[in-house]
Amino acid sequence: MPHMDGTETLRLIREIDEDIQVIVVSGYASEDLARDLLKHGACDFFQKLVDLLRLQETVERLRTLREI
Image 1 (cartoon, helix red, strand yellow):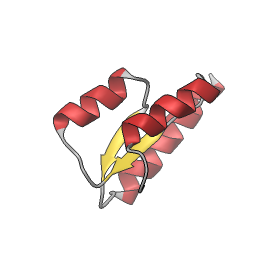
Image 2 (tube, one colour; image 1 turned 90 degrees about the horizontal axis):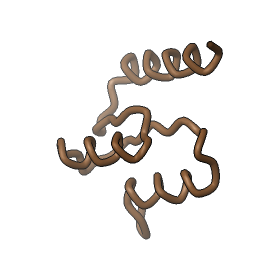
Image 3 (tube, one colour; image 1 turned 90 degrees about the vertical axis):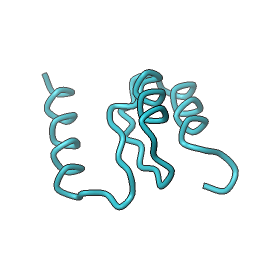
Image 4 (cartoon, one colour; image 1 turned 180 degrees about the vertical axis):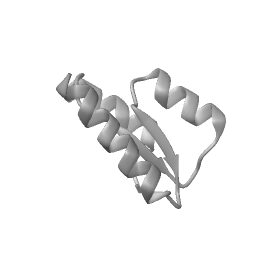
């Protein structure tokens, strides 16, 4: 995104709705970034190019947890 990074986007989303489930996809991945995003409420973190099967599994897992 041209004007903000994933951490800032996550922070703004959390201000709007603390309960929304956020999966972050980034082209600039590092262990520190992933750890920070997860610590601040991201449900999962994927580095581009995304493994679509893993993404689908994550979405299904989050949907199941939400229904419980």
